[in-house]
Image 1 (tube, helix red, strand yellow):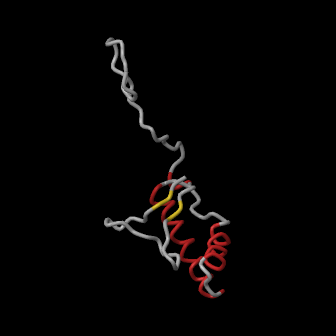
Image 2 (cartoon, helix red, strand yellow):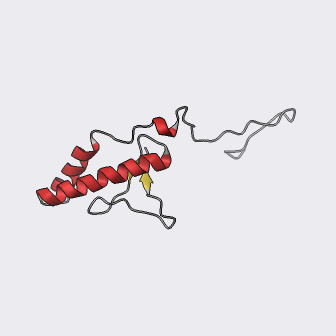
Image 3 (cartoon, one colour):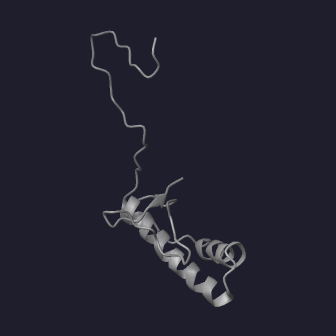
Length: 102
């Protein structure tokens, strides 16, 4: 038997559910600010990318803003934006921020 097929008895229609779990909280209740975003972003740009202190601070600030926008866009408190080399959120063809949602 092939995998992924649904076998039913024929008496009742099967219940179709989404593979994604819907959140029980309102999007407006999500706090888009993650306290560790700035420090993680700063360390990334300072140590991994090798930016100067001022550049890393600016990039980290940009990244925090992008992460906040991603969380509000997806209604997911754990979402993070895909960012470029200076912390700006990468946008798709529709103008939405590309996200990395764990």
